[in-house]
Length: 202
Length: 202
DNA sequence: CCAATAAAAATTGTCAACAATTTTAAATTG
DNA sequence: CAATTTAAAATTGTTGACAATTTTTATTGG
Image 1 (cartoon, rainbow over the protein chains, first blue to last red):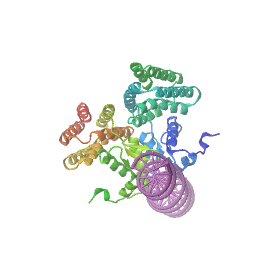
Image 2: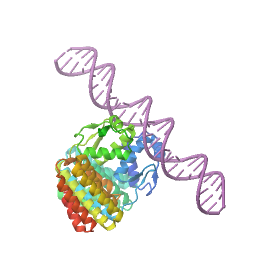
Image 3: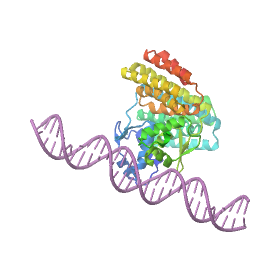
Image 4: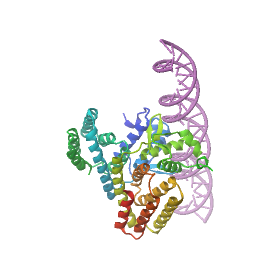
């Protein structure tokens, strides 16, 4: 019944993704330490894969690591820092969407539609963890398709930005914003897509 | 005699830093795989710490990881991607220098001077690995002092940018550029520092 | 009762062994 | 000889054990 008590065997990547969406959803409070052993039990693996996931999330910036003391949730970012990050993320994602419009094929468009649908479902039915995860997946789709090089950089920005203001969003507004972005992409309207993106990201 | 045959016990962080500067210096060719066992022997540790370092460098973007196949050196970034990254890095570092000028105390300025001196020595005496490493350390100083949150993001950008064009730089020019940046910082001349930075980073 | 010290518990750091997978080399077949 | 199959080697994935460190608890002395 309880999600966390499922004892399937998870891979490193799955563990990392699950922890990331937990963090975005605010499931752990700021500065709270994460323990290797308890998470190892939760995911039914040994400490190795947990440590791997910690390292990745540390590099992304959502966790902080101190020698011999393990990791804890990063403290909240300041408004000024958030503004810098937003600007960087917007620049990056603009470039990616522009490239995506040029290069995406039918298969990409199909996947895009599925991800958009999944995001809408999450907004209507799920609670925050699901919404955060599907929002990230949707944006990640065009970023990853445009540039595998920029993807990890984008992810680090997006996660930290989401961690701060994940609570207050109006879901209906968010659905409309994403509808506008995807619609513009589908008709290859670059200007429209970039403007819609700017409204959503800032 | 040979650097790589030294068998001291290195920590995870040291291994990560050494590998990073090796990568920046172009010591490994593109798409070349890095093997856990041979590096474990080189650093006199077991595979665990090597794996940790691989994960960090993968997240930064200089290595690529594939399941059951390990890591290999990332292929070179395209010019367009590099331009996007440069813009992001410049924005980020401008914010950091501006904040650094406001907040740095005497101890910071002392450290800054030492790092600048070390960079100059590297330019005059060392080969590329040393220059890349001390260049990164110098910039990292004001970034880390201004924001621990932005530091990992900056590092990811700086490393990828350095990896592409690390061979052709003129060292004398680079010394002058960094002299100008640090001098402006020391007299708290924000405009001058930001302009000097823009000349160095772009 | 409080502070300082000492013992115990909890946690992280590292390692070596084994399992699973991939790559390379050898053998087989047409 | 080339293509396929099979066996061997190399490499990564995971685990449990033990060492080193940190944190918590218990003890002691004033």
